[in-house]
Length: 114
Image (cartoon, rainbow, N blue to C red; front, side, top):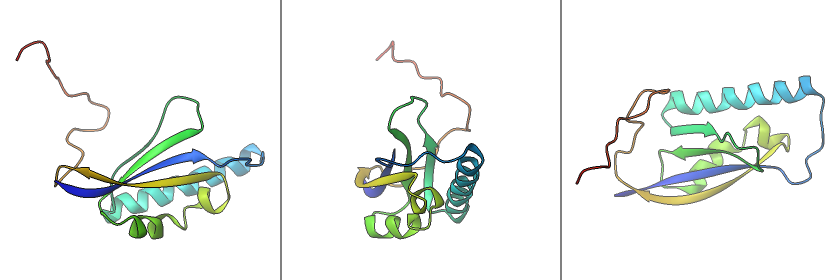
């Protein structure tokens, strides 16, 4: 077991409405930031929630340091522009945690037998 950082994105309280084109620009810059983190190996998994609530998405960082994860996120355009806020949590989970299956596939789990 080891420590990781789990971060949860929420809509920023009281965020102002902005034109659709500007919102799309911020979103694309946000996604580019997340891609850079993934490509650098800083994240294990990132993704949005499908439900339309204030909770928008999650990130699992490949670090046990909340301060380090915060530094990686301080330039996220969606945070800088006041569109999202992010909460960080130290998470205790199995060492070597990684995405175990290809995106878009579901593992075949059978819980009907012991």
